Image (cartoon, rainbow, N blue to C red; front, side, top):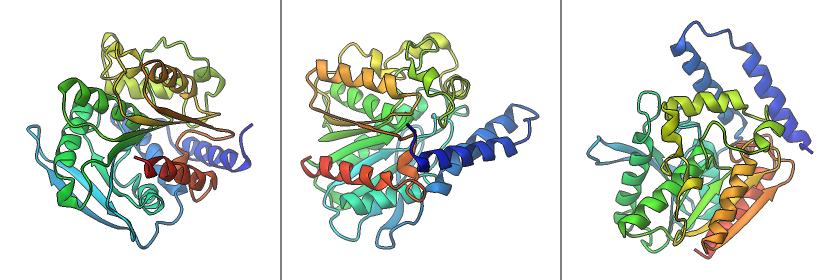
Amino acid sequence: MLTTQAKAVLADLARKSSAQIDPADDAQKLAQARALTGSLADYSGTAPAEVTAEEVELDDLAGPIRVRLYRPGEGGECLLIWYHGGGAMAGSLDSHDTALRQLSAATGRVIASVDYRLAPEHVSPAPQQDCIAATRALLARAREFGCDPDRVAIGGDSIGGLFAAVVAIALRDAGEAMPSAMIMLYPNTDLRPDRPFASLDSEAGNVMTRESLAYENTLFVPRVEDRTDPSVSPLLAPDLSRLPSTLLVLCEHDPLRDEGEAFGRRLAEAGVRLEQRLYPGMIHGFLQMDGWIETAADLRTDIAHFLSSH
C-alpha cells in the first residue's frame, strides 16, 4: 500500500501534469517533460549547510564533461561518483543538487555528480560514453580530490542506475581499475518495448507510465532494434560476473520494480555480492523527496551503512 506521504507526492505531480497545456510541437513536449522531471527537486527539502560544492571540468575527446563535487562537513576521504536519473533526456546537476548534498552529509563521502549529455540532442551511446569517460578520469584523479582511490564507489538513480551497471561492465571488459562498490536505486535495466514485467502495468501512474517510459526510451534509443544492446539494457548482458559489490534498491510501487528484481537475480546468479532492499509503500524517485517523504532519510542511512564497508 502506498504511504500517505507517497500519495501526497503523486497527487501533486498529477496537479502539475494537468496544469500543462497540450504541446504544440515536439519541442514543447520535450520542454514540458523536462520541466516535470526537473520539478521532483520541489520535494527535496533542505540542503545541509555544511556540505560545500564546486564544479570541475574533465577533458574528453567529445568535449569537456562538467562534474559537481560535493564535500561533507566531516569525512570526505572516499568518493562516490553519481549519475543522475531522468530517462537520459531530462534531469541535471540542479535537479539532484539538494538530494546529493543530503547524501554527502549522510555518507561522509565526496560525491561527484556527472553532467552527461542528454537525448534527443545526444542519443545513445553519448550519455553512456560520458559516464564511462568521467568515471575513468575521476578514478585516476581520486587522490587529487583528497580521496582514497581504492574506495571509489559508483551509483545512480533510475536511468542513472542503468548507467552505473553499464560503466562497471565497460571497465571490467577493458581490464581497467574498478570501483569498490555500486549503488543502483530503482534502476531501468531493460529498454525493450515488449519487456515482460507486470509492474509496468500494475504500478502504472506512479511517477511514470508505459507511455512516458516509451517516450523517454524513444528519445534515448530511437531504433527499437538497438534496445537489446547491453549498453542500454544491461539485464541482457551475457556476463554480469566480476562486477562490484552492489546495493540494489527497489520500490514497492514502482513500474520499474520487476525489471530491477530481474537484474538482482542475474547479479546473484553471476556471483556478485548483492544487498537488495525493497522499500514498502515507496515510489520511484524518493531519494529526491526528503521534504515530503521521511523514508528518504532511511534510504540515505542504508546507503551510508552499505558504503561504510566499501
